[in-house]
Length: 368
Ligand SMILES: Cc1ncc(COP(=O)(O)O)c(C=O)c1O
Image 1 (cartoon, rainbow, N blue to C red):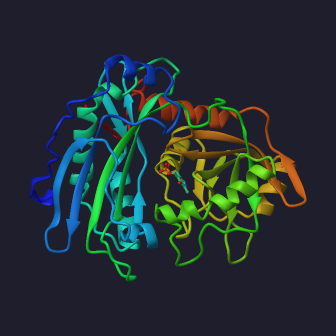
Image 2: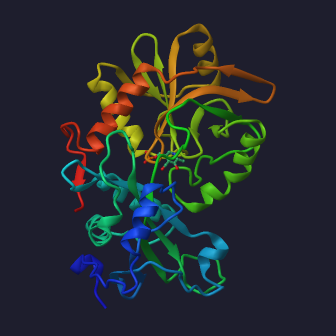
């Protein structure tokens, strides 16, 4: 048994029955999103007595879970999402993984799970990506393919009492991925959900836990039934302040050169992309601001021309323009084409991530 916090290692046991080169190449030619997985996964276990232990990289495969495992009943689970990018010289990098590690630790605290030290989080990514490096799609101009990395942690103690579990598993799986929205960068439509809430004060909105996404699915069905791509949520207290979309933060660009995103109130996710957009906006000479913005501010601003662009941002979808907003009894058209600021920030972000531009912020972290 090795203690992760002490040794920080994830020794690799390679599987004997690895995917053939031909089969892997076929997957990489058309990866989709989150459907195919690499040959290995990183894993570690935790108990109060032993702390983190049994850290390793092993064959990807089904888990054996006791039917009484706490996660299956009470959803004591958290996750992260980040990408590994192949650069033109063949090296592989990820983007601000320290921010994901910190958010993972904050989510762990909220869900009464043990914190994984940043150094162990980073090491697990390095060891898994080094092992499955052939699964990182080759650099191709404009292709936006990557290896999506999904670290997660869950309670697997077999016990039906409601309390923090005494046995926890940490895993990282990896999935070669094309763009999140298959249609390319075209504006999406958002459904303003007034029936459902994502989170409320004191809830788990700022944590990246599975339960938040389970509870978003009914709202997503509602959005689809109203002909929309995604949901946008407002706060639950006054039902007027814009929070975020189901898997993306929201940004607005004003006519007089401001980039505004709803401030972090504890009910929305502190997105890595959101943070990066705020900094890139300043680089581009925009005044970046985090503040409350109401749904009426948005509708009125879009109608008057004070808000010239609205876009969503997140690791999976990068920057996605918002083309229309619909609500019960009304809608507003916002854009038919991506706006210039969205395009510029998107390009700046991708250029850094894919190694085409100098990483002046020190955001990249080499994995292989
Ligand atoms: C609810 C929610 N908001 C925002 C984001 C964007 O966060 P990030 O930029 O860290 O991917 C995500 C995706 O992780 C999300 O699930």
